[in-house]
Length: 334
Image (cartoon, rainbow, N blue to C red):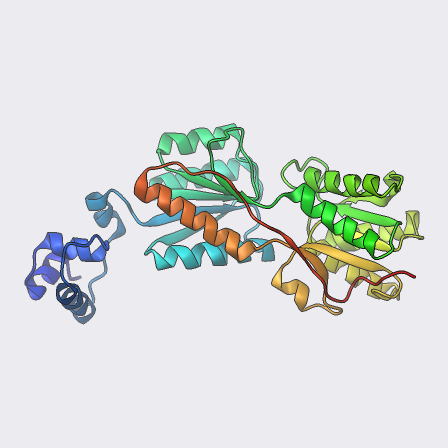
């Protein structure tokens, strides 16, 4: 038979309420008592039940995190930050891979409701009204990462995508490039696709470079679309000197396709990515990129959410700083 909280209290010679307070870091006991309770827990192998603990503090110490593509490097770095902070505050994380599918997202929200999570981090996908309604009925807080909602009261953590794209193209122009192509995300992607295209166009306009629609193509942020769209660009605008890819995965796809065609980077073509994934420093040549502090963004979202859970107070959105990481895929033209 599994040991119970009553067994712990009896062996530690304290009340059940004291054991509960130790388990939930609520205070009201001495260090000696906390040490004794933890020793007994370890000695008898007691495993606290999250639901049972939730009956006492009305929380299960769990957070739901929803990603459209949990296997991507982008998602894994955000998750690392969110989980690191949550773990330090004795929260566990339930990860859901929605695959960008509305029905699947609704199914996962129902699952998180059944699991009685204390809050939700919603990443890289639009928080539609139907999702917001479900979360509202759950009466738990939600924080967005690289996402948006029609409700301005919902806090978020994100960069200024339009300004970051502007800075990437401005950087290329400063290096002497004027025939600059862009591989964007999806045409209908209002979260990050559209703002980054707007930044690209603003930078061209600032420098008096006429926009040629042949230089703007659309992928889906993934490696394969970077390969495909770069080959399309080679056919339609073979005189281009630089490519701005709206994700590091697509930029790495450009590097791969360039190698396949015997095109040298940066001697023949310059490439700048977007995201600052750890992977971007590992490719050959190492990728110049616009860095989002993804791990830090995950930590910030987790911190904001837990603060809302524990205080019941609302929070405001956070725009975090981006930066350009110079490596070896952009050259200066004479």
